[in-house]
Image 1 (cartoon, one colour):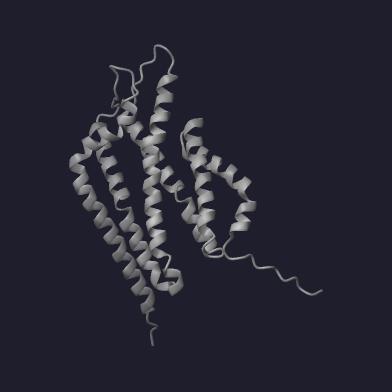
Image 2 (cartoon, rainbow, N blue to C red):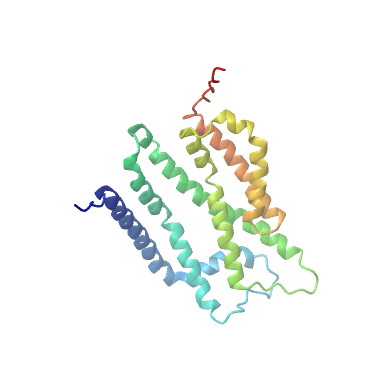
Amino acid sequence: MTTKTNPTLVEHLIELRQRLIRAVVVTLLFFSVLAYFANDIYTQIAQPLMSVMPQGTGMIATDVAAPFFAPFKLAFMLSIILAFPYILHQIWSFIAPGLYKHEKRFAAPILISSVVLFYGGIAFAYFVVFPLVFAFFTSVAPEGITIATDISSYLDFVLKLFIAFGIAFEVPVVVFILCWAGVTNVANLKEKRPYIIVGAFVIGMLLTPPDVISQTLLAVPMWMLFELGLLMAKMVDKPEVEEVSSES
């Protein structure tokens, strides 16, 4: 007799495929709408830099196809960002059946917090970080140098900061989940606070461009959000289990 494939595994794979397809479809639906406004969206995203550039200067395109592809690339990335809540919901719906009832009660708060913090990080980058960073960069340009940023390079810079700040702002959720799962606890994290602060600045250095302003503007909020995560984690904090020494 031939051994049959485990139907449970097959069902899980089919469900995972269906949820991935749904996430892709929703992302493409957003893109189909945003693509029409791609140029307007790019103009809006470029505003923080354009507003501080010297009068009479503007952005340039060093690649022939850049004026066409850069706005569409931005529209596609924004489509993923806008679909983030739905993608997160699909991920949660896939793993939720394997959780206990008392674990599921934190589902809505975690999902909502994740979405709000992710969008909050992007908004912080756009409204706070960009004006400060671009104003600094344009003010320190040597005399006689004409500032003319390439549109593709600017887009890569902006998207990198969007993703970096969006992910970095998830720190409270990560701290909460780690304490909730019993991986660590509040007391242990407090003891490691100096290392975490140093780690925040290291992450800021790795995820942002090589300037002190953007690195600090990422590291300090991460530290503050870590402290917020400690306050949130007190709701589910599990005291450290004392290790039982073996009898000699």
